[in-house]
Each structure stands twice: as structure tokens, then as C-alpha cells.
Image (cartoon, rainbow, N blue to C red):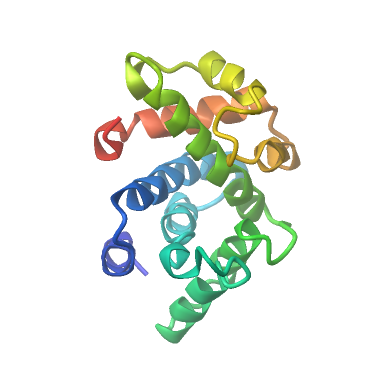
Length: 181
């Protein structure tokens, strides 16, 4: 599946603008992380772009989240098991094992934390620093739904939290106009 095909599928299935922006943020972060693990940036980015494809349909049935995306993709002939497993792992349906799985598992909530931090920063995403994000990370009440435990799982990639935040933040800053931040 090409990025263009995946983006068309996202536009078909996802109606919430902010959810699309989230998926673009995760895509950018995954693309930035891939080379660090000898991964294919296009495949890693695809996992990020497609990971929440079924979110609107499954928000009230979290046990189906991720599974519906995998079923839909398989029905369309998509068979990249590494990407499918990463989608399942991010949703908690399997324990992350591969670097792609751990990355998606940790990137997903971190992008949410970064967006929340950008929204309260006077210069939005452009002025946000890794230190700003790490300070917000320590505030448990801030962006409460961004699982600190899942973000901290970046250690399973062999990355310390400050480095992980720096890579993801930089990737998101690279597409800040698309994110509207």
C-alpha cells in the first residue's frame, strides 16, 4: 500500500479532523524513528498513519480497536504482518515485541502529550522544546490520557526518554503546518 492509498483510506474512514492530525503526527514520528532501528521509513510511517483507522468506530468498544483496522486491511489484500502486529500491539491486543511495535506503542501517547503541551505554549509547536515536554510529562494531571507508562516503554527500544521526546517532537515540528500547530 502506498502512502497515497493509505491517506485516501484515512480520509474515507476518519471524519474527525483532530484524529487525522494525530495520525499524521504518529506517521511523522514513526518515519523519524525507523532509521534508528534499520527499519524502512515508509513502512514504519504507514503503521503510524493507519494505526487509529477504526478509532471512531471502536471508541465505545476498545476491545475492537485495532482489530477492526487489521480486518479491514486484510480484506483489502494488505498482508504486511509487521505493520498489522504493530497496530494490534499499540491497542494492547498483543505484547509489543519488535522495534516497530514498541515504537508505535510509545509514540502514540507521546504525540498526544506533545499536542497538549503545544496548545498551552505561547509559540505552539514551533517554540516547544524537549524540556517543556518533559516538564509536562512529570505533571500527572496534564494530558492525563497520555499514558506515561506507555511513553516510558521507549526504554524497550534502548532509548532514554529525553532522546525519544526529542526525536518525536522534532518530527512533529517538521509537519507543524499540517498539524495546525
